[in-house]
Amino acid sequence: MIRKIVVASEIIPNADEMFQYLGGLRRFGAKKCILVQCINQADTPKEAPKDVSEFIDAIMEENLQSQKKILEEQGFEVTCRVCSGFIRQEINKIAIEERADLIVAAARREDRITGYPFDDAAYEVIQNAGKPVLLIRIYEDEKQEQDLTEHVLFATDFSDNAGVAFQSLEELAESGIGKVSLIHVQEKTRIEPHLIDKLEDFNRIDQERLDSLKERLILNGCHNVETYILYGSTKYELNKFIREHNVTLTIMGSQGRGFIDELFVGGVSQNIARESISSVLLIPTVLHN
Image (cartoon, rainbow, N blue to C red; front, side, top):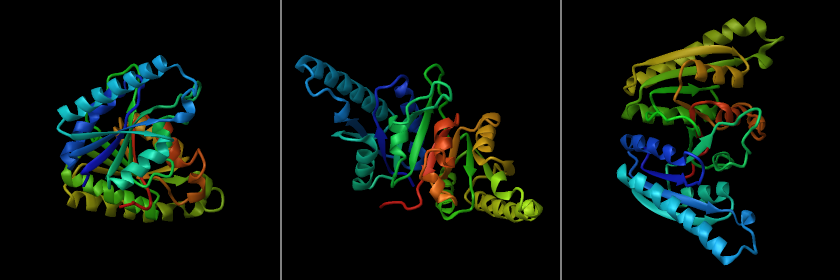
């Protein structure tokens, strides 16, 4: 159940469109929202003229109040917090202190050629987060869809973290979601060449696991569930599926079997968070109360 959310407030193009999605969280129980604006003092000139500082403060306050109004119109009880420091530390700290259930941030999709800097607030937030993080995908030149749960992809490697993430999916299913695709990717680099003769057995075992997850979702009221076993690069196959099947939300654990890989930029969850065209919900292994 999602009762309280913490939302990162930013001044970026189309950021307000991200807030249009949040009303959909109300049906999952969300009532309270803490809107956090973090000022990184390292980016603020020490000798900035007073009138410049006051101008910047006025813009940030106007942005904060505008976003607060949108949330209140959607039925949220909203409080605002302004803090100083690094967003990934401060927002996670606030979420834990306030016993929030979810952290939300707007996420611009990284362009492989030009690229957005990895220090965008959304990607900062997912570093060492002790709470589930919802990255809502926004585009600077496209109107957003409003239903995040129209087509949910759940990616699993059957790790302990994936099990925790699936419990979150079950909770969402109880409140009503659309189509769900359950996917496991047989990682080519782990199977070839030495285990290729075992692939058929792996597929059989993992299909049984997926079928078991499907049954659990059906018992929770979600009847439109499909299962898929793919083969290849996990990052590539998931991103391809998301594009080709119009996935609106991808749910996965923030660490998988290859935990060490996830410590570095390029791990599967990091890659999906940065490159997928869908919004992404990442669930940490340990949830802080």
